[in-house]
Amino acid sequence: MKLTILGAAKTVTGSMHLVEHNGHKLLLDCGTYQGRREESYRVNLNFPFNPAEIDAMILSHAHIDHSGNIPNLVKQGFTGPIYATNATIDLADIMLRDSGHIQENDIRYVNKKRRKQGLPDQEPIYTQKDAITAMPQFRSLWYQEKKEVIPGVTAQFVEAGHILGSAAVVLDYLDVAGNLKRLWFSGDIGRYDVPILRDPIFPRGAQTVVMECTYGDKPHESMDEAYDEFIDAVKRTVKRGGKIIVPAFAVGRTQNLTYFLSDAIENGDIPDIPVVVDSPLAVNASDLYRKHTECFDDETWQFIAEHRMRGLDYNNVIFTRSLDESKALNEWKEPMIIISASGMAESGRILHHLKNNIEDGRNTILIISWQAPDTLGRRLADRERKVRIFGEEYYRKAEVVTIGGLSAHAGQNLLVDYALSSKETLERLILVHGEETAATAFMDKLAKYPELPVPTFAEKMQTFEL
Image 1 (cartoon, rainbow, N blue to C red):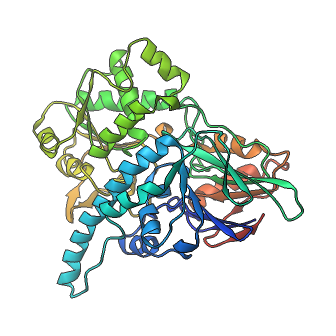
Image 2 (cartoon, rainbow, N blue to C red; image 1 turned 90 degrees about the horizontal axis):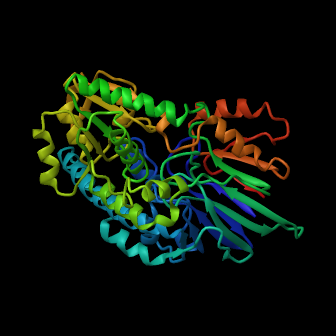
């Protein structure tokens, strides 16, 4: 078997890896790369292989940096099956259509500027129609169900605990000597005791582990500590009469936050102020969380049994669907919490909320997730005093609070345990989905465990013979 790392190499976005075995090709993830606009367009438009030659694909979960280029893959000639969990398929449906819509809007803005410079128009990488066209190729696999995805390679999904339907991918195959081997691809690794979802399952019996290291340099504070920090930020803002603006990923982070906030209001930890989820995608994703109760953990079922919520319906959370409802939030003068996509503040309604609130010192911008370089979210997390929104400069007077402990990614300590879990059989440890500083710190940490093979922080296009 041959494995080539095609994306999320020395960066966090653009997850994509090619497995070749017995003359057949299997793609693990097909995510979009996020960075500077022109570079992102070029990288995402052009595949380093012929899509028509891929026999099958496996999707670990629906986040766009893992799924976002699937419509382009199909558009360029891929006709094989795409295996994913039931929940991932439903989420991918709404997320890819939303991504196509964003690309159509973005390209109109880009082309307006290009025409002024005398440059030819560009086409969107794909459209909403392309996203819809790709969906019939998805095939559902339940967790632990085994399926021969290409000749000689059997795949199964195990719980990753990251977002609804997220999974690690386990590939079993025979090497050239006829020995049974196992490749374990982590996807994104979740955390223990995160609301709603089950805990991640660690690798077992694997000779090769390909794993993310997004927070390889940071041991997360406990959820309780992060919760307290979050509550303090809300109280502080409410006391000065401000609003809390939260750029949050529509899938995963938003649902965890609404769970936290509803519980905090019920317990009297924070005042009973409006909590508004203002993102059509997040609202639709929350509907799917209600549908896929098979992914809930025991604590969530207890929460439901105690009648503290029905599915994921909360008495004190408002879900907006229309643009008029979103605009009306600007007229509310009292303290409130607005949760809106996108998580890196690069597109969507969150930009309007930031524009309208960033220059008011009473307000708080709450950053609760990793922010890619060159995004507005990263500039806010770095507490830059002056930022551009919709091409105009704004002076940031709002307080910025960053809380890493609410991340849905595993922190350093859990990542170490993940790597150690197959130490008896492990021959190769390949690190992806992390920046260089995070990976270097993680490898330094792993060096304390001589029972592990020396990890490789993969280069883009690096190939491994397994």
